Length: 211
Image: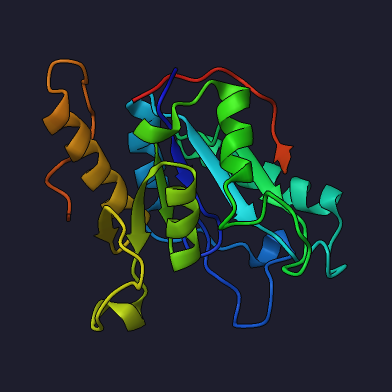
C-alpha cells in the first residue's frame, strides 16, 4: 500500500469565496501563493495528491456536477502545466442536513480513495484550513496538518489538535517531508528545499507512487 497527501480545496489550493458565497466559476478560482511549489515538491517526491472537498453548492443548485468536474479538470490542467500533479479529486455534493457518509468530517471520501488507489490511511496526511478538515483526517486515521488563517495566526490556534500547524500549503508540505526524511532517512530522496519555513470522484484512477 502507498501513502498519500489529502488536500482540502477552498482555502488550501484556491482562495475562499466571501462568507456565504461559493466558487462556481473558473474565473473566480484563484490559486493561492506557494500552492504550485508545494505540489511540485510532492510530485517530485513521488507522493500522490488527492483532493477531498465538500461542495454543497451543487445541492444548492448553483452549478451542476458536470460544471464542477469541469472546473476541477481545469484546476488539474493548470497544476500539470506548473510541473505538478493532482492525482484525483473527490467531492461531496450534498447539503449539510443530508445524512451521507462522504461530507467531511465523515471519512467517506478518504475511504473511497484508499480503496481506489490502495492508500494506507494511517501513514497518509490530510492538509486543511478548518477544524472540520482536521476532524475528517482523524476520523479516517490520517495524520493531520492545519493551515492557519491570518486571523488565527495571532490567536490561540485551532480548536482541534492537528499533528502540525502551518501558514500555507508549501509550509505544510515542507514540514511533512521533513518528518518523513527524519523518520526514514535511507528510504527517501526528497527534492524539497527543507530550509523553507516551517462520493464522487473527478478524474481517472491511476496507481501513483508513495511516500
